[in-house]
Every structure is written in C-alpha cells, then in structure tokens.
Image (cartoon, rainbow, N blue to C red; front, top):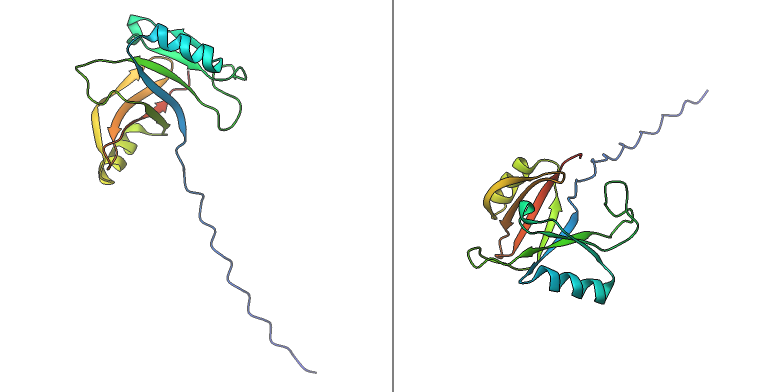
Length: 151
C-alpha cells in the first residue's frame, strides 16, 4: 500500500487589525460678522445656523443637512457640519479650519508632536461636544482635533 505524504499547509496570511483612521468631522470658518456669514451660507447653500452666544465664544453652528440623528450629527457618511468663529486680531491664523475626531486627545497630542507638529495651547472642554485643541501640522497649516463627549 502506497502512502502519500500530506501536503504542507500554507501558512495562514497574517491579518493585521485595520488601522484606526481619525475622520474629519467638522469645519470652521472665521467671520468678521457672524450674522452676515450665516445669511450668506443660508441663502447660497440652504444651511441652517444657530448662534451660541457669548458664553460659547459667539460661535455659530452651521448645519449642512436635514438628515440628523438625535444628537444633531449627520446620519449620512461623508457629510459634516461646521461653524463660524469670530475673527480676533489677537489670535494668529484665523483661517478655515478642519476638526478631526480622536479617541484620546492626550495621546493624539503626543502623536502630533512626535510627527513634527505643534500643539497650540491646552485642550479646552466644549460643553456637550467634547475636548478640543488646535495644532499646526509640519507645513504650518492650523487644524484642530476633538475627543467627542458622549453627551
């Protein structure tokens, strides 16, 4: 009786865990006049705006879709909301800004610095939204990140 040697099993390809990607979740635009800015984006694009008042730094929220979940976030993938912040001559780089969601703001701050970026100030808590801090990337672009709260 002839015996056959078992065929060697191919080594299973190692599956690496998917890399965590932090999405852009918000945009911010500077405004000299938030009312004028709100009117423009409402008329030009149909966005809805809501002024948050002086207790929230005179920030204005801009909603770019009507398809929102209970927390006011867009339900559709790829759609983000934003806001308008008052220009301030005392603050540098009052330019359009993107906000990136992160799981842990302290760890992300360390990653930014290790990658050659610079953190701008200390993280601040935005009630009902999360912890926020701005940074410069290696090309001098100002952006921000937020560790969203579960509120």
